Length: 512
Image 1 (cartoon, helix red, strand yellow):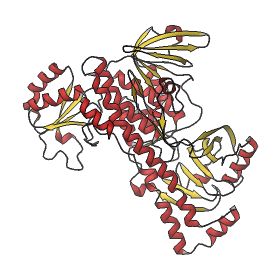
Image 2 (tube, rainbow, N blue to C red):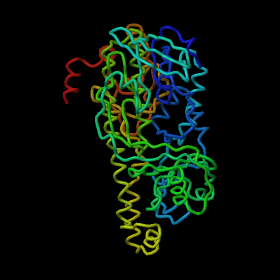
Image 3 (cartoon, one colour):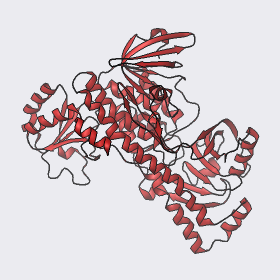
């Protein structure tokens, strides 16, 4: 990790924010031979779990930077099997969702951010091109047509660094976004909560219903219990209902939420506000917003971190090709076109998930105390039990959805074709690869890109998309860029992709 006095005067790409999205962006750029510097104001090792569900597509992207195996190996107990509703953790159970029956998780990893970040930081430590300066603040940013200039500080030392490109990955309260003057749109107060990080051994109460989430409906001490490391690390999300809660009040709340005299210690507690907001634009000149700096979701659905990883994956290859002079700068406009609408839809899904949680309370009927809830549970008729379980089952998409994934600016949706993990090249899926070898070599030289050739049978084609297609070109982010039959048409398609969206098309999409 670099200290301020060792930072070069100039870097190609400066990334503000060393969380999972910022570090992933740097490691993706490395695949293209692009040097970057990540600036992180902390030590990049969060002490609290934070985001924890890593969806299938994010894991595929982590595989591209060589981190997937380490992530899967680091996943702690318990397994992600059930999502459970309880009166208290040690009290009466209300119902549960069996994730195995839904075929989930398939390719997911349930790894809290405090365990994910050390893996990515280790990747950075072994990189020759992706560097990170921790415990370093970005004090100021100045932009012009050709460069970005940032003033950095660590301790008593300051340093001015210039970069060709700036990536704002500094989180939901992004100072970089504020400095750039990019506003957010959407509701900014959906409720306030305390995130209480606990140390407790919950093995006895979780082992027979393993899962990461317990919705505690005790009306006197409700909230969401997130099980991270079975024997030692958990989070209890406590609704504040507009009140400041003291440490003693939080202890009392959690004691009654857990029940059973379960011993615990509070490691930390912080108040936060649920929001559903999207930046009005993702690009300003040579600066780009990614991750939570670009979008703020309610945590219901776990789509925030995953959408940020999609941002990085979509933008990094485009920035690399433009920086090398291979693609035109207009290609960078497609990042906003392809990713901002995805974030807006995923934000809506997260908000919908948050609102539909109330269906379980509604199915149970009114209750004001734990004793009333327990009596209600004891006296439910078979029909009422079925109604409660239907309300619980109606939450399933909350826990199983990957959200939507970016398509292309031309309207092609994301297609999961299971192509190889390499991020550094275009890929051509072919019915008859040998006859394309020579023209492909010519096109690589002409466009200064790498094109890997694969027989179509190597793809995963559940929907029969490839069945009638002679050739399919995939961009470096695995999106379909072209389908056709001749090298001449492929030549035209490559030129169009590297040129980016036309001004007319960009205006039409913006107006829509």
